[in-house]
Amino acid sequence: MLDLTLIQTIAQSYSPQELFAALVWQRRFNQFNGEKVITDLSQHPNLWSSFLFTKPIFAPDENGLSFGGVIDTLLAMANYRPMPETSIIHFVAYPADTLYILSENQDTKVSQLLDLGKKWRADSVEVTDGTNEEYSFRLKRQLRTRLESNDVQHPRDAVVVCYWWD
Image (cartoon, rainbow, N blue to C red; front, side, top):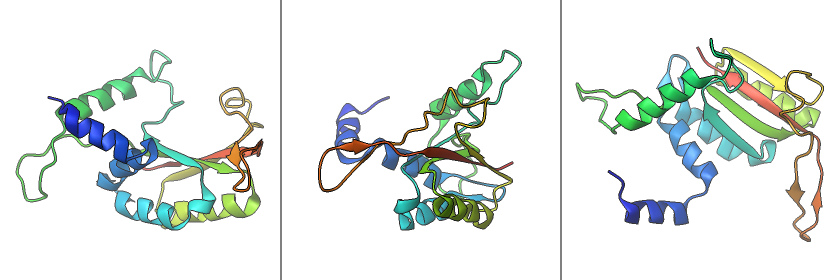
């Protein structure tokens, strides 16, 4: 089931961010176009520090744990096989519908990220920072970045921009 040689090669060749980018690239549904999203993110690396594409993270289910989304993701990953568009067999794609982008809290960056949400035709775009009581304990208000001139880390105020497609 798992080809360890292939996994080792992939793990040594790609970052976790690149692996998530590949998941986003594959995904198309309703107004969402993963290839367009990844192309735009690659053209604007100064706007973001990292991103995650998944089911809504903080959306409570009947148990209050968002466990249903985890189960959907596990099942889709267990059953997914790449198939050509012309194939009559289709597997459940990675069931993400929400993109979370970590960015520095600067008006110009956040504004450009909001504009990308319009371009990507997201159904909802929200900005979450430490002032939102619901998320303040989950979102640390510091984004650590390395200065190119030395290894000293400096704290930066951060936000998470959340894009959701129905």
